[in-house]
Length: 146
Image (cartoon, rainbow, N blue to C red; front, side):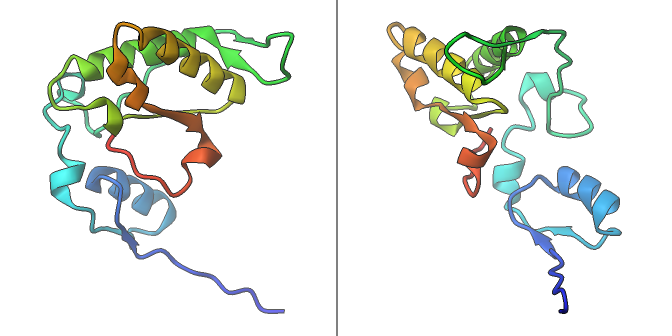
């Protein structure tokens, strides 16, 4: 039986520099960014991106994966702490609202621990309850500014 291939032509969500990267890596340069630049460039002046070649922050975290006795799922506390720091950086800048932030974590236990931190912090910072936290599959098809 024949296999039908569908070739992506336009990227409607990603920043043009990110689209250019994966276009060159996977599409022989044929993928084009048609995303709204007013949206994709909205964080370009965020101080943490100053001088960055891509509108992304990458952090190397030296941590240890752990498990709680109640679950086979994994988490990394140092990664969770780094997420907390990034949230505080983002919310300390006037260009971001909590409801525009999405946190994608690889493991359910990591999601639970980040949500537990947000729940606890909501006592003094109720706006944190607007942040979306989930696993990769729970974000499928969703769009977030950050």
